Amino acid sequence: MLLLSVISVSLFLHIIAIYYSLRMIVVTGRQKAWIFLSAGIATMGIRRLMSFIYFFTDELGHSPELGYELIGLLGSAIMLAGIVYLKPVFLSLRESEDALLESEANLNKSLKFTKSILDTIDEAFIVIDPEYRIVSANQAYLNQVGAELEAVIGVKCHKCSHHSDKPCHENGEDCSVRHTFLTGQPHVAMHIHLDKEDNNVYVETKSYPIKDDAGKVVSAIEIIIDVSEKKKLEEQLRQAQKLEAIGQLAGGIAHDFNNMLTAIMGYGSLLNNSLENDSILKSYVAQILNSAEKSADLTRQLLAFSRKQIISPRQVDLNELIKGMYKLLDRVIGEDIELETILHDEVLPVMIDPGQIEHVLMNLVTNSRDAMPDGGILSISTGVVEFDEEYCKAHEMEKPGRYALVSVTDSGKGMNEKIRQRIFEPFFTTKELGKGTGLGLSLVYGIVKQHNGNINVYSELGQGTTFKMYLPLSELADFKSDVAEVVAPRGGTETILVAEDNDEVRGLTRKVLEASGYKVIDAVDGEDAVNKFEERKDDIQLVILDVIMPRTSGKDAGERIQKIKRDIRILYVSGYTADVIRQKGILEEKTDFMSKPVSPHGLLMTVREILDRKDGAS
Image (cartoon, rainbow, N blue to C red):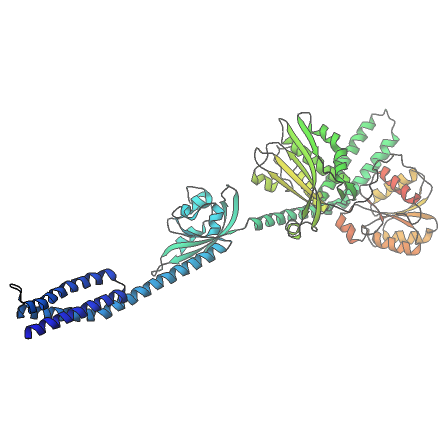
């Protein structure tokens, strides 16, 4: 009975052990380990079962022995105890593994979330190791260099950003990352990167250190901000400041210079008229007048590109203006250059000073001719574009709306980006010494801006150049013919009061008017003009006033004179710039105005036109 009890207990313990081991498969998730253990336990259990069967059958040679079965019982008990003991250990291990898996999942989720944030921002973001290799990069950087993430990881940053085999600091650039690795401090630097098409991208780089527990910099974060648009606006500001400085200089000399030119041109014209046609002195006088005209034109150019030149806008069809210039432009460019015009189907009404816009076109065409020394094709085309408020604000244009476009395109040698960016700068020229002043395109820029328009240039080396000029379209009105009969100035017998503080100009004006039959009363300033008008108000038919005079300005004197005699006709004259004249309230009103230098012919024509004008006409 003892032997049977030992066998039965041992078999029972094996069954329990098999049960627990199978349960552990489910609980711990370690299927392989527990399956092998269960198989081992089951094998031993079969041995116990055979002993139990042999006990009852008592087959020869298979009778169980008590000592052997006691050892089996002890082994079964130890095995069961071991399973019971290991259960909490494996359960704890399972919990640790579950926690680790959950932690890894959360970490992956956090990394994906962080990457999603970095990929969303517009600024390029890279992580660089001490060997200048890229460790990580966001989508903005990948878009900038035009590459996939796998193509930049492990690649030197200067290779990706600068297309260079040497670090950027070896090429003379301030490298923010290098500064951070050397000092352990953040750093900011301005850089020029290259995009996927090898175009310059002006960037601001900001680097920040990543340190280990010992405080050593193990990598650096570099944030790359595209400041190309900001730099463009800064260049526009600098351009405007240069124009303003030149304008202030021009404005400072314009008044006195124009007075001198008025005297030179006036007395030169009088001298020329008094000489016989066959006189040798005629050629000398012609040279004097020619030089004076060039000097006057130089002053106008300085004022024009500084946007201080007085303009006389009227509505013109841009297509007709270009048609009218075709023959002249064709002669200017020469026989080896083909001129073609592609004009918009509709009328393009613009409020412009025709003479100044013609000067712009002549200048652009001349530049295109010089860019094609071996001949080529020059195309002038017109069209219509529409700009929104954002574009107008960025390009310093007055208001959004529809604009007439004039494109001047040549097939010449073109220019590089560095030259293109400076092409409208005052005194910048690519021509040889003595062959260009650098004022031409600055003048063009100033004239277009003064007409509330804009002008851009597009060019590449070997691909030609295109200038695009935009002028605001106006409401269509009836166009009047520009053809006017040229007649000699007609004199008269009227009495004219002339107020001019410059002795030479006042004396010249008196001589010119008296030579044409007019009676002249002269005054040295505004106060003198008012006093003399009060004395002779019934005799005077016209008052000529210099705008800027001591004691009383021409504007104030004119207002006081009109209070004395409301219907008196007044002609204002000045050599100052447009902004000064506007401050005096002259140009805003429907007043008669002449800009110095004034030629005798122009003065006599204007005086006669004012005197012959019917009351109420303007």
